[in-house]
Image 1 (cartoon, rainbow, N blue to C red):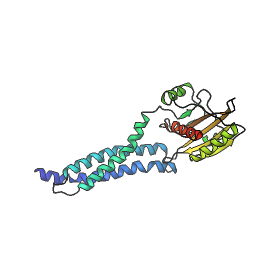
Image 2 (cartoon, helix red, strand yellow; image 1 turned 120 degrees about the horizontal axis):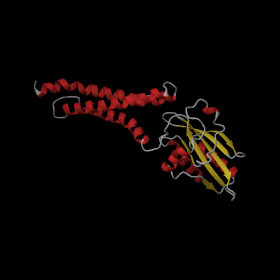
Image 3 (cartoon, one colour; image 1 turned 60 degrees about the horizontal axis):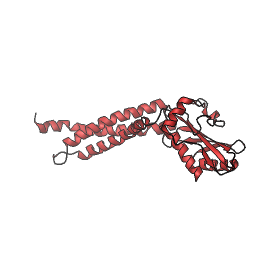
Image 4 (cartoon, rainbow, N blue to C red; image 1 turned 30 degrees about the horizontal axis):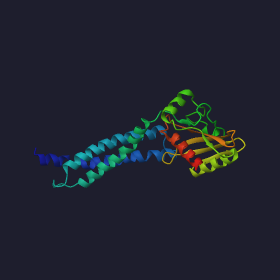
Length: 249
C-alpha cells in the first residue's frame, strides 16, 4: 500500500480527535455547575473530570496526528479541524491538570485559622453544617502543624479600633467579598458568614472573632472551613488573606 493511500485511510483520526476533544470539554465543563445545582453528586462530578482529562489526552494525540497527515501543502483538507481539536483537547486537559497540580502544592487540609491553639468556634453556622462531610470541630495539632508549614503568614490581626467598631468593619468586609453574613454580634465579638465558590458552588463557613486587646484596640482572628472535601486547594487560606487585607483597608 502506498503512503498516499495509507494517509487517506487514516484521515478518520481528524474527525475522531475533534469529537473526542469536544466530548472531553463537555465532561470538564458540565460537572461543576451540575454539582452546584444538585444534578450530580460530588463523586460523579469528579469522575467526569477524570474521564474528561483522559479523553482530552486521546483527542490531542489524534488531532496532532491528523494535523500532521493533512498539514498544509499535503493536498488534503481538514487541517483546521485538526488544529481546533488539538486546542480544545489542550483546554479540556488544562482544567483537571491545574487542579491536580494545585492539590500537590498544598496540604490535605480544609480548616484554616489564624489561631490554631484556640480556633474561633462556629455557632450560627452549626445548623447549616448538619450532615456535612467535614465536622465543625477543629482537628488539632496535626492540622495546625501542616497549616504552619504551608501558610506561615497567617496570624491574628491587631487594629486600633474598639471591638464594636471592628465587628462592624468585619461585617462590611465579609459582605464586600460576596459572603453571606449569617451572624454579626458586637456583644459576643463574633461575625459568621458563608462563602460560596464561583464555579463549583462549594459552601465554606467563616467565623471572625473580635476581642479587646487590652490596649484600646482589637485582636481579630479568622477561621474558614470547608463543608466537603479533604483538601481545599488553598482556598480557605486565600479567603482569610483577602479578608484581612480588607480589614486593614
